[in-house]
Length: 225
Image 1 (cartoon, rainbow, N blue to C red):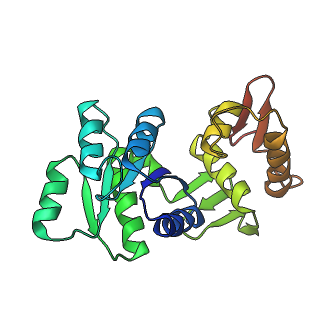
Image 2 (image 1 turned 180 degrees about the vertical axis):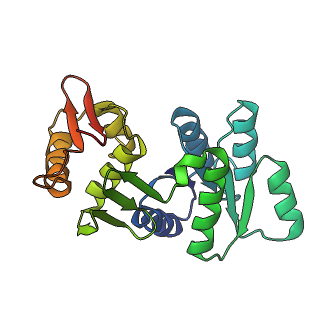
């Protein structure tokens, strides 16, 4: 998932962003409400995590502005204001869920995943299978024919994205935006290098090839050669 955290407490935002990334997600951070609104309107996110008390524009005003622009991205409000009236106000302003601080990260993650699943059921699928290649997001484990394959975090994210779109050609632009979170071409061979490393780890001698290069288009992972 691609998430946006709008939080003015830099340490709290850093902690949450790191924890989400370690859980296999992409997380951007905005330190005030104006920047958060701009980022939420200019990029596609699966879920927004928004504090209520923000400089420049408060969280409820941010959410109301999003809804006024017909932006339906799910919003989890994360706030120290946790009384019943506070929660009701947040939900009526357009928030989809409300979690009071202090919070447990596991609960925050579960709520984010529930919001994303409601919006897009495929976004929180826990396992992907192509032929005898299996990726388990929850266990952060990849196997082929039952044999464990050790991947670096970026390789895991790359494989997950390819398997999520199994049978479809995935372009360089799609990979740059969804695996590297780049919105420009860095003019390097970073994708080719990672795809090559990934291919060397998941392919097996005598077994059908799964990861293919589509010249001039991108890459596709599929069963059946």
